[in-house]
Length: 388
Image 1: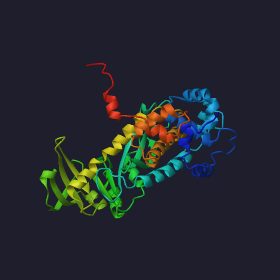
Image 2: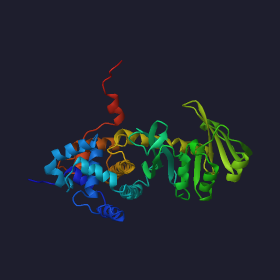
Image 3: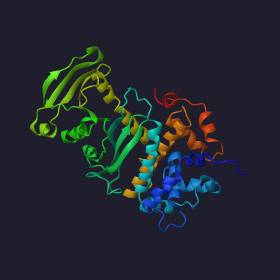
């Protein structure tokens, strides 16, 4: 007797199916497809992400073991390793990139009023990249070094809710600073970057677009001080200066004024020098904004640990990008569900619960809200020690 939907089917009910089909039709994803549609492909790959499958053979074995339940999971086509491998290789990865963008837009609306530690009306974005190492002989298109392959995930993270708003996947040789050319600058927003993105021509583009940037200065930064502002050394601010760039070519690229802030981090016993084009906010607030850049480092660490983006099910560029974008869409989907159902658990806890309950026919709210849980940090602290 069938009583209700499986947890996996309830999870997929949060997906805007009409928008997904529009993405598929735009790239003709189901052209000449008879049995295993793009929707079947997406469900199979999402299942693999949620249950931490290691390979295509893993996916095939698990789904075939649950063959009588596949219809109730929403999978209509027959799942086989070769069919899924072929779908990942030939179906345009942009289908899933565009669909992830739709989910990202919905998630940002849900998290727009969330705080990230600083009370600001403007949006604050952190831009950075992470490198995923690959075997060059298996992934010859992912050039990085002479005997090493890699891809880079260039990510613009909205700090409200830690939602990735822009993700660009490139081979490992693409320099991070090139991503500044691909951003659609949002007037009034803050863009927080590390000093690897220090390019005065590109920073001036952000400035002329009406947005603000916060970046660490390099040690050889040459400047001319125009005047200094009062500082509160008890807050860690040792200098707050309005400067102009001294180097000839840098001054040509950035002719406007800059603000140079020297901040002492008492906790780590280090000095940091920040550059920004915002001349109004308190210096300590600028330092705190840059400190929040570590949200993106935590985001990269989290997705590498809990999503399948380090071991890939295919070796072609299309297969890798398909897997990464489906992984991102699953992450954003769980973030949306967390907000809509008003769950207090962390995304880590929600994913762990889903991984063992996908085939159960229990209301998803009951599954995710009645389980006693503890934080990830505490759970890890309680593990047995091998060496004392």
